[in-house]
Length: 506
Image 1 (tube, rainbow, N blue to C red):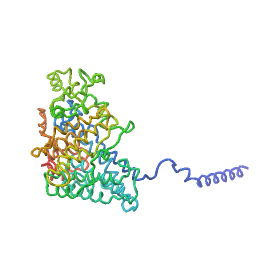
Image 2 (image 1 turned 120 degrees about the vertical axis):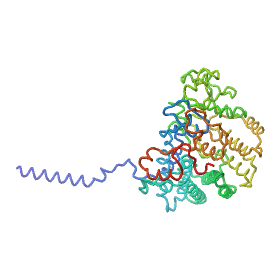
Image 3 (image 1 turned 90 degrees about the vertical axis):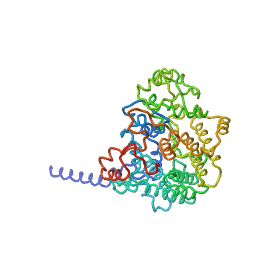
Image 4 (image 1 turned 60 degrees about the horizontal axis):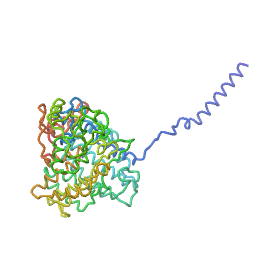
C-alpha cells in the first residue's frame, strides 16, 4: 500500500512539474516593465536634462556676471566671493553628462542607419551639440569625442579634447545635422521641444550655429565670419514662438525657480550693478524682473503684502559682501536689513513653472545685430536686429508671467530713446545680450567673456582668489578616477583653477 501511495505521489508531482514548466515563461515574464523604449523618449529626457542645475548656475554663472548674488558662505560660496567651490561647480558637469550626453549618445547609436528615424538622429545630434557647447564653454577642455560613451562603447576613462578641436567638430555636427533635417521623413511628434516641427528645428540648428560662430569672434575672426556668413538668411529663431525652451509645470518644476521658492528663498539677491544698469537706463524690465520687500527684517517677512515692483524703489545688493558686510551695506542704505534688497521675483519670472530658455529670439537677433555691424552678413540693419532683440525679450517676460508684461508704449519709448550708435555698437549690443540672457547663466557667462561686455568691475571681496572667474574647475570625481586624462588636459590648457581662461576667451 505504501508503494502504491508513493508511486501516485511521484506521478502527481511529475505532472505538476510538467504543468508548471509548460507555463514557466508566462508566469515569469513581467507584463508591466518595459523591455525597450522608443528613442524619441530618450531624446526628450536629454532635452529636459538641459535645464540648468540650480545652485551650480546660481552660485557661479549667474553670480559671475553679477546679476544675482548671495552674501552667505559655506555651501553657497562661489561668485559671491570669487572663490572655488567644487561641490557646486561640478553640478553642471554631472547633470549634463549623466542626463544629456548619455542619452543623446544612446539615441544616436540606436537610430543611426535606421531609414525612417533620420530626423530623430539629427535632432539628437543638435541637442548633444548644445549640451557639449555649454560644457566646454564653462570648463574648457572636456571629454568630447569619448564623452558619454561609457554606456554605449564602454569608454570609462574618456580622453579630454582641446576646445579648439571641440568647436571645429561642433560646427561640423550642427551644420550637417541641420542640413539633413527633412519634412519628407518621419515627423517625430513625441518631441517635447518642437513636436517634430522641422522648420523650427532648422531654426534651432541655424541659431545654434550662429552662436558657435560668434563665440569665435575674438580668437579666430576669419573662421567666425565664415561660419556666420554661410548661414545666409537662416531660418533663425527670430520670434518668441520659436524659442527653444523647456516647459515646466507643477509636476516638473523649473530648477532655479524651485530653489528660489524654497530653501534659498531669502538667500539670493539682485546685484547693485544689474539693478543700477536697468534703473539708470530707465529700462522697463526692472519692474518686470525685480521685487523688493519693503521693511522686511527677516526671510519670513518677505511677504506679498510688502512687495514693491516700482523701479524707483529697487535697490541691488553691492558686490563683495559676506553676511556681516551685507548687514552693514543694508544699514548704510537705510534699510531694515539685507532682506530688503531687491530680488528676482520668485512669484513671476522665477516662479516654479517658468520656462527654462535655451536659445531665444532676443539672443539670436542681438547676435545678428553684431554680425551685421561687423559686416559678416548683408541682410537687414544692425539697428533693426538690435531693437528686435530688445523688444523680443521685453515681450518674452510677459509671456512667462502676465504680471511681468511690459506695455507696448513703454517698449516703443525705450527703443526710441536707445538708438544704436556706431561708435558704441558692440558695447550696446552685448549689454543688451547680458540682460536678455537673465537666468540663462551659462550663456550670459560665456558671452560676457567673449565680448568683454558689460564692463563690470571686479568683485571687491577681500578674500577673493581672482578678480574674475574665467572657468569652472573639474569635479573631484574626475580628478580621482580619471586622473591621467585630467592631468593631460591641465598640462595643455593651464592650471585647473577658476582664473584660467578657455581657448576662445581673448
